[in-house]
Image (cartoon, rainbow, N blue to C red; front, side, top):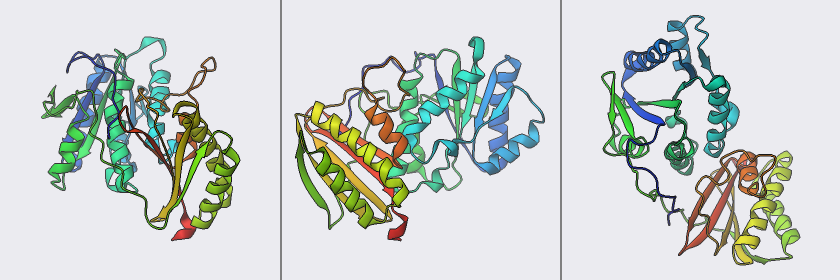
Length: 321
């Protein structure tokens, strides 16, 4: 099942420059990132850097008291990649005050992905950056990737998400970039036995919340997180009933210290950015998926005109371990 995105311009036409930088070892990391930073400084551009702590130390050692370079910590946005576009937008808007161009360096700690689903959503986030910032003529981003383990499949998957690639200090169009209208989602795995299932319709909200709260408690979700889950469930169930034909199916189960709560209906979400951009004060609607991303550890969405919509919420269940 795939989520369809609006048509976009052909490769290279977007003003937002999004580069993949495969490197091997600290020397290559420094060579590529410092080259990118020095290009920015020479052009009087600001720089925002979000890389793992060991790489931050390397760069700080080479950039002493450089006011144009700001280091930020992506972990403050939490584990859910669905929160990261809003965080990057805020960081780059702040540093680009007055229309100043901004370059960003963002390296994801791929090897610390919490699960296969989390890794898949991290890649999807990288692809969505091209959509989110397509009209950002003054922003560009370099994404270093440690290719030292020779995992060609992983590198190829990440190449699909970046229109440009940097090698030997030069950037060029990336022929493997997926500029098509559909992102190649991996199919969601089925629920783990035993799972609970409940059909719902209008008027069943109290039953939905009670069911999820009891199942989450049994699965080991910490008590102080149950109210957050209840809010997320209320938002997603309300959207499902309102936009998904008036009824749907709820499934819950636990697996690998995670509680899963899944909503299925016949609706269709056409906006792939739904829930990933902070709603404005004047905005009417569009807050349900945003809240779910803020409150849950991971949110997976699969939507198509033919197959309907599935929204799967993940919450850590540490007492299950």
